[in-house]
Length: 311
Image 1 (cartoon, rainbow, N blue to C red):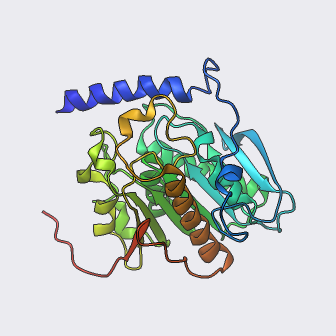
Image 2 (tube, rainbow, N blue to C red):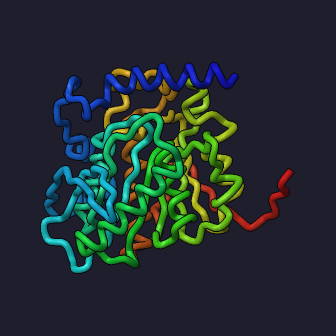
């Protein structure tokens, strides 16, 4: 089984490398404004659409205490001082522009958003969670954001390590984990999750487990996080959705290995983005509670306190 999983990861790496290798410049994707496309048919104030502020974006090298990594920085044209901020961790081997609509929706509502760039298949959970800490510290020192109003979000491995960073380092005022997968040598579910103090939103893809075993299988998917999540954790299950349908372009070449959903990808993405924006507005800007989703699109549960026995 271990050899099969390693082989599967290699196949995934090769296929996603072709679709996300912005670092090698041999595969270019045309710029697609997913946020502008998705807004058609939505109400004017829908959280899944753009806010009132114009957004500026740039690719920036983060230099902090001798460490260097790349982010795409999204900033409102006229940010409040000091502004709230979000650190966003992509899924393993996914390009940063797969999450551009999330970043723009947040930045247009006053958040400074730093999306970590593409990272190697071989980057570990501990390294990625440390990257989040480095980015957060850099946002405070170089961008002047409010240190008490920094949220963290991520998808897949990035979702897992967003929780890990918040539990391990503290300092994050809210966490959104989009279809997190606890696979790997470090378990968040059976470790740091119990010590998480920040509010947590788990966004899960209901049928992701039907795809390849490397795409959030049942044994390690978002349901396992919810089972051991702190009281008050919100779980939003995206009905009939798979592991990549919440991305800006889930049908890029190479993502077929994780495709198993029958839901409409645009609606899945809109529901996930609306929840992400609403959650951070609530916990970082004092906004209202999350709006209830349409039952045929998503369901919500809230974690209660109950004992969990370790083996």
